[in-house]
Structure formats: structure tokens, C-alpha cells
Image (cartoon, rainbow, N blue to C red; front, side):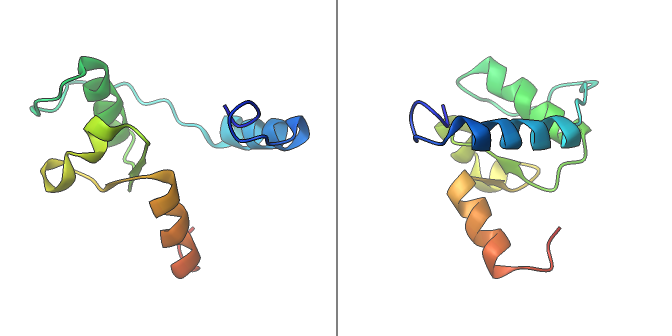
Amino acid sequence: TLSEKFGFPKRIVSEIQQLLRERTLVAEPSRLPDILLRDPDDLRILASAIAGGADVLVTGDRDLLDLGKRAPLPIVTPRGFWEHLRSNPEVK
């Protein structure tokens, strides 16, 4: 998607992929949250973020973003997360 949709050079995409591989944590949820979502696959993503101890879930998925205050953790767009990082340089 980064190359095809956004025109990123393949070298940059490879660097991003490598960074993600080095920092990825795969968490298997023991149970799914008791939240109603239109797409059941989204529930597993949310449960994995919770099980992994995520501070925030970054997604472009409208169903997850629409959870708002009902979600057990902040859910933001990639743009929203980027803006948060830029305005809070102490966040790591």
C-alpha cells in the first residue's frame, strides 16, 4: 500500500517493514472484549491490542475508530497518532 497507493520508494518501504518486524509483539487474547462491532475480525484486533498492553491502537478502520469512549484504550488514525507524537516529543 505504501508503494502503490502513496508512492513511497521501495527502499523506504523495506526500511519501514524491517522496523515493524523488529518491534512487533504478537499477543494472543485469552478472551474477546464484550463490545458489539459490525466486523467480528475487528474484535480480535482490539482484543490483541488489549492483551499486548498497547497504549493506543492506530488504525484507519472506521468501525474501530467509531468506538470512541466505549473502547478500553485510545483508538486513533495514523494521522492523529503522528500529530500526537509531534506535539509530545517525550513520548517514546
